[in-house]
Structure formats: structure tokens, C-alpha cells
Amino acid sequence: MKAAPPAPPTPADEAQWGRVTTPRTLLSRALSVPLALGFTVFLPVFVAAQSGDGQEDAAFWLQLVLTMYAGARLSAMVLTSRRKLLQGSFWLFVYMAMGVAPLAQAVLGRVPTPVVGPRSDLTLAIGLVLLGCTAFDVGVLLARHRPAGRAGGSQKEPRPVMAHRRRLQLLTAIAFVCSAAFIVKLGGPAVFFSSRQEIIAGIQDAGVSNGDGQAGQALLRGFGTVPALLAMLLYTRWLVTSTYARRKVSVIVTWAALIALNLVVNNPISNPRYWFLTVMFAMLFTLFPVSAAMYRVALSMAVVVALLVFPFADRFRYDEKNYKPVETTSFLEPMALKDYDQIGMFANTITFADSGPGHFYGRQLAGSVFFAVPRSVWPGKPRDTGVMVGQWMGTVNTNLSSPIWAELWLDFGPLGMGAGLLAIGYAAARVDRRYA
Image (cartoon, rainbow, N blue to C red):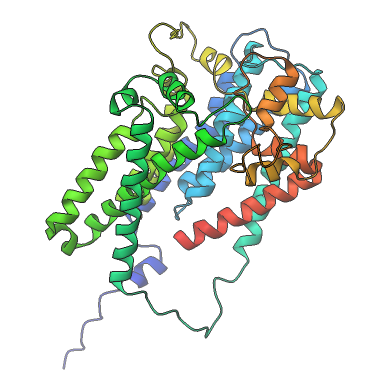
């Protein structure tokens, strides 16, 4: 009697012994070395090796270290087996706005916003950014060791489907009402396809913005754009996942109307580039929420967009009369002349505090949390940190950056800044873990 042939190994057995290599693994192995070296070594060294009028002092070398550190962490985000949207966004911002762009500025000796203090304040600002990045990573590590849930805990019963649909219908109704009020307040849909300058002028003419603050403008734009975006994303996801939704004419018609509404209030002409990129990435991850390949491609391509497209993408910020195109022969110059002023403004914030005001011990944070309180009710409401520092500097344009490092440092000092970024890292890791 013949013995039965051995059962073929299961995929789990083969994976255990390393005999199965999935396409995802192949992709990771093929990309890991060039991607990590490109972000961490090649691009920072290439930028640092360019000719320019900058000083090769402590600030320069510390900036190079910060760029390489952020490049290594961004590479880890791209190549991780889990999609870490919040952490990936954080490191993408740090790599470009606090790393590569300031490194280009250090090489060329040119900055978009003047650094008014001594060189030592700039060196301190770069060191504090590096300290904050380290604290963020510590927070991520602390979140990793927290248990995912309680064993034997009670499971919540799923909410009935109709309750979710009613909430979605309510959100959609709010979106249409708020966006319609936004469009009517600014004078009709045509103004949304002119320029951001026209939008700001329309908001001022509507009487919801004044020279002392931007709370009215923020509320009007927020309620006019965010509910419409959320409703569109939720309807899109419902159509992707539900056969029932795809068979309902009312659902498809509502989704099409939301698409049309977002083309008006969330188009790239009348909105800041940061917001439009948020809209695009939100739509992408709504359509492909669990695709590791799409996550990697999106995060990697975002670096290319930030390097080559973002500095030139302000064509619709001003009208034809005030628009001045960038004329340059070097890819470094746009990063040195436009937008990326975060490191310099952190240094200016340090100089501002040292000039007399000192730390504010939560006052600026309170102003951010309660930004919607009108100044008629709160006469002493703090001004935006970027505006306050810009007015102290005497700049004509006070629409200046104030990164989270500067906000936390100005309120709570270096220890409070480190603790705040540690908490942000912890929260980001927890949210990413729940999403995964």
C-alpha cells in the first residue's frame, strides 16, 4: 500500500520558512536602498554641494544633519509595511519645509523672510527643531508599547446602518447650505475661478474680515469648504464599497452634485496650495485606503511635487496685474525665495522673545484654541504668532509662518516644546495604529 503523498505546504508554512516572496516584498527590497540613500544622503549632499554665498558654519552643518535625519525617517515611513498617514505627513513636512528648503537657503545665503537676529539664534532654532523631531519619535515609541485594547473587554454593538445614513444626509445638507452661503456671500461662483486675491477681497467686502484678526475669514472659509469635502469623501467611499449605493440613483446624483460643489469651493485656483494638496491626498486615500503601493507612491511623489512644482504653483494667488512669475536657472532658488520660511521665522521668534516679551505660558495657545471669540468680547485676544513677530520685525507682509516648534517654544520654552512634540508623536502613532 502506497503511502499518501505529503500535503503541499500552506502559504503560512512557506512564508514561515521564507520560500514565498510577495510582490510587496519585492517592491520593498527593490526600492529600499535607492530610496533611503536618495532621501537621506544623495539629495541633501547634492544640495549642500552647490555653489552659493552661504556660510559653512555650525548652523549649516546642523541643518545638513537635520535634513539627513528627516530623510531617514521619511524613508522609513515610505517603506513601512503599515500605512502611517499622520506620521508620514509630519516627516514629509519636516523633510521639505524644515530640511531641504532651509538647506538650499543656507547654501545660497538667501532667505524668503529676513532673519533679523544673530546667527546664534538661527543655530539654536535648527537645534530645537532637531530636538523636537527626536521628541516626536520618542512619543511614537511610547505609543508602540501601549496595549491595543483590554482583553475580555466588552465589544460595542455596531451602530445600525440607517443611523450612519441619516448622519451622512445631515452632513450633506449642512455642506450644501454652508457652501451656498459662502458662494452667495462672495458674489457668485465666478469669483472662485479668478484668483485668491479676489477671494480675499470678496471676504473683506462681505464684512467678515478686519485688520485686527482673521477669525471671520477662517470661519467663513472653513464652513464653506470643509463640510463639502467631508461629504464628498464619505459618499465616494460609500459608492466604492457598497453595491446598494451604486444602484441608488439618488446616491449617485447627490455624489455628482457634491463633486460639482467641490469643483467650485475647493478648486486649486481660489485655494491655497496646501489645502488643495490636502483635498487631493484625501481623495486618493479615500479611493485606495489600504493600498500600500499607493501610499508609497503618493508619499514619494509628494517630495517631487514639493521640490519642482510647489514653488511655481502660485499662479493664481494674484491677479494678472500683480502676478510676477519666477525667473530662475537653478532649482534651489525658488526654495530660497518663496514659501519655505519656517526655520527663519522660528529664529525670529527666538529673537523676538529675547528682545523683551519672553515666554507667554499658554497665552498664544489660548488664542489659537479660542480663535473664534471676537475681539469685541475679548479685547486682549492674542494676535497670530506669525503676525505678531512680523509686526515686530516691521515687515510689510505679516502673513508669515509660525511652525508648531515656534508656537510651543514661545509659550512653554524648550522643555514644553519637547513635551508637546512628544505628545503629538504619541497621538499620531495611536491614530495611525487605529487606522491600520
